[in-house]
Image (tube, rainbow, N blue to C red):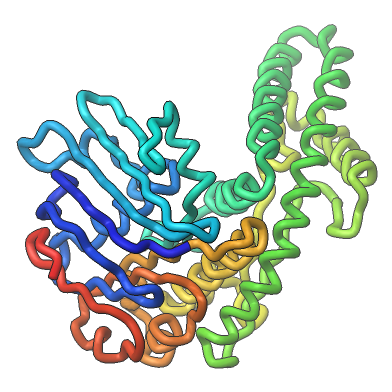
Length: 365
């Protein structure tokens, strides 16, 4: 996929304009708070989701304006296409190839991106919930049914937790618990199998990317850490039985605290560099490199699934990386269209084949 042109009107602080990126690496540089990230955000919106900055849509309208409009011409599915997003009076309208659509979801079928922003560093720095969310979001792109499976699991989990609280006061309800255990283990086993499969896929690609970023000085690895004794090579049936066994062992504790302590909602992903915990021992630059490797691996898997390479958006990615790692990102990530934002003017001097945009007070040159 290639962005051929991007037009924006009343979008955040960006001055109304049309930019024409090149097909490989595009460096967007300038001081902080000038509008560099806004440009990446505009591209990301054409993936059909919400902003990666978690902001409200009406906050994307320029100051004292009533609407924002974005238009993108892009190459996908072996042909030139276009899409338009208009946000006005708290409503968003979508056009794809001049045809009005009733949902942003239609954009997902035509265009895809992978984005890295500084917030993604929480993938390593913070708790297991962030890492589970990363894996689940990635699996959802591959398996449409997976989102409904997660929703089903959460509903059953909520019901079981409510029952656990009631059992502490009414022990006669204990017999009902096994019914919810069966349902929870069945859905949980499916989730575990899909997570194991995705970890296996992304692990090898992330290791390869990280060797490139670190010039073969660091070995990245990752492993799924279930709260039961499930293994990567287990069948779904074996996983369900192990999940059930772990749940039975923790039953009294679960009743005492009124919460389910075993299952996919409590699992974690261990990320290491040279066999040491990335979270505990890696430097800021190493942590940034590890997340980048995971994001590039995500792009590679998405490329295999769709048969087209997604666009890669890298926001403030070069800070805290040494010159060699910066060179890898600017010049060695081949076959993808890449957009990189940075503050350092020196970074643009490293670019060997690409296009440079300068942003100042929302004006892109």
